Length: 421
Ligand code: SIN
Image 1 (tube, rainbow, N blue to C red):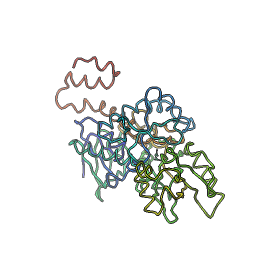
Image 2: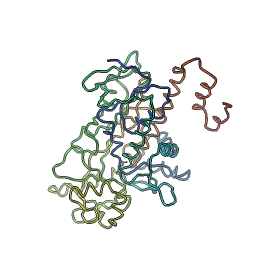
Image 3: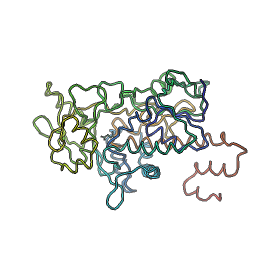
Image 4: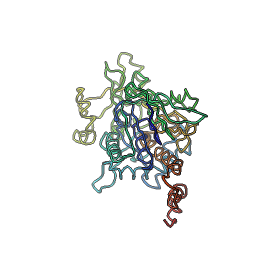
């Protein structure tokens, strides 16, 4: 079967869906997911989405991201991530994302490891799920976006060193999708590990396709363990993440003697390493503890309803029991090399989100920078595709209004206001 569209997007996590929503509505978009729409890591994100609180917080937030990334970050990408954080949070609010709010109706912020302040917007302890549900509702309003579930991208179509679309497997049938632009938003590669917080279907498909087609890859050795994943003796594959915000709001990591052996709010690489060292000392007991017993039960239930219930289902009362934890694979900082507009080394092929690598995270991602990365660079990618395809999609003769729309996206925001139509 052959299908034709303007933009093919593989992946229905935050970066793929947000890019789709920010593409012009005169573009015909095909959005595919390997399994169900919701089987993406974004849906599992608990802690939140980080944002600069105001202008004064821009430099501290940049510094926190660089320190966590051990200064291996691309500084320009960090500047973009932080400076464009607030405008994208505002866009999410316009899409009706129901962020938790204070009594004064301002955003409520939590804190996670290596953040110098409370700057993480959240929705209880299932931020990813609520963001994605709001974005999926927006998708329903867009008649220009077709969605195919259980449709796996198996390769791209490459000719004369250009990407011309993708080859998909849709429920056993091959579809050739001819597209002017193709966007890889295929997520992480946790499905390759025996112990992970990721969906097992996420096996780095975008990266395999890039490797096969000689598309440049960057920092693929930069992988991140999450320090606090519930230890369950007989579980393997996907395990239950215990959000870093539990530590941001008072939780402490302790050894089997109930002693604190690491500052629970250090960057993830440091905390994970300290836990693994501690576990090495007790080979028969491959875990340490997360202690929340000093936190009020009602607060835990209200602030962390999902995790409270998940722990209860497994026989743990957060306010009374120490939770056994050990690190597990969580995130890939490296991936398909892209510039700040999500362009890969192959013309017409873009990549965003976990499968892409702008270098923004260095070798260790700062907590709650992943959903943010998805929206900031997803938006930029959409802007780039919009301007590239704008004129090729003008239905009649291009008008003065067409040119103004096109230029508005190219010039400074203040200059854009000066156009007379
Ligand atoms: C967490 O809630 O600990 C995960 C959030 C993240 O990976 O940034």
